[in-house]
Length: 469
Image 1 (cartoon, one colour):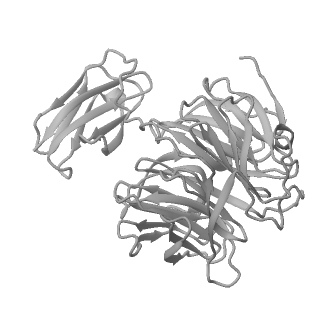
Image 2 (image 1 turned 180 degrees about the vertical axis):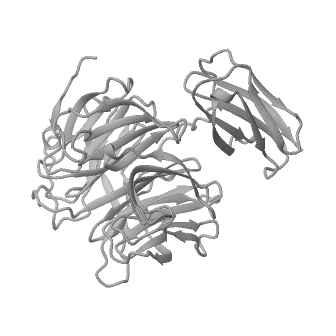
Image 3 (image 1 turned 90 degrees about the vertical axis):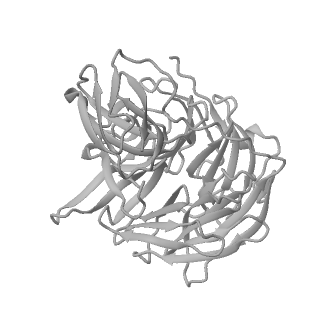
């Protein structure tokens, strides 16, 4: 594939664009800061309840804050929970169903899990433990699997560990369990990941030999397989984070290094990824966290606030809007530190954007004239695909719970067995050694009904139905 690279200075693309003003094509509605003395802030995330109310989750050095942003002109505080580490630079959050998950880096912390179903009245903390790690830099979710990146702690034998990725099942949020991960210390500081289905895009830095972007197949979480890497690209720095387009063809990637621009990367073939464009605000600014909605890239920029580009043509991104959350340190001043906009969440159905600023807290912002399109449906993993000729047998069927699943032929690889209910929600998953060809399961803890059984591996996928009585 031919490599095409365009170096783009945003202020040259837009005639007359100047950071003398703190916004362009965006409107700020409200700002919230915590009450504790010396507060500074880190990441944010969002949650939408069953009634369509929208909430922000904001991290500070001391705590996790839950805020109702349904009316973006009036941010309402719902609850605050201290972390175990009361003075950390880094917190990170993700949501699955009506649960929020929070971690912190810097040691002395834990995994915290919150039940959000009672909002806007209250939030309930249901789990707070360091057995899965006392320091985790970042987390991501794919359905009920929580990916804990740069996960550190002490095991049951008192031995310290540092894993690039730990995968935890939170199907029972009161009892999270490790189901796999990337334990190869060659990848050292796994920093952040973007996930689509069973494919993980891992940003790595300070690894000596593996700095850059690495793509893994996590179909069997205990046995991740490296698919491809991008370690030689323009303006490479500390590879920090990335996010992909809805068509899974393009990735926007950020290096957390002064002077390194954003990159669009062609990921249509993960074995042969190529940089398409390098683009930026001002040369000294740092792009921190990018996210994508349809063809728009929303980027939390340390120096220059919340920035928006159109990447309809990924080889030629177009700068279309910004709101500077910290004019004291931004606006192209080439400020050498790491203040300004830390994170953003552009996925609310209403189009409200939230942005967290290190010194100024949480902002609610809108992109003028923008109505977000509905996102594409997430894959259930049940779509037809190329399959080997392997039969899938289930007996007894119907069953009261104890079931035997067998393959007509053994498969010499790790297989994943999954159950989906009629709503498409995965209610069970496990990994098995395909070479044995026959497996026993106890589904008696799963409610009665009709379920889809899916068994899949690297080269095939088979499905069948089962009735539980």
